[in-house]
Amino acid sequence: MPTERLLDYAGPAFRAARVRAGVTQAELAERAGVSTATISRIENAKAWPSNAHVDRVVDAYATASGLTPLELLERWS
Image (cartoon, rainbow, N blue to C red):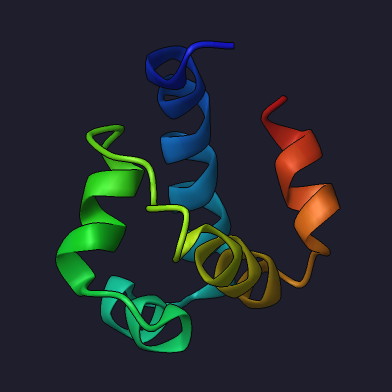
């Protein structure tokens, strides 16, 4: 799946998981060790986390939503 198409699905799914968990973008960014702007770009389908950050970002979203990373990813695949 091309990255652009992946972002179209992943961004909204990540935002929904964060909002359901009651976590702010700033809180999630702190957990993932990235900037709030990075979280915003991911959720708005403007960017995908770098290879250096992707595991931490997915783990932070999964932890916030109470899902495993695999469960989170399966929701938008």
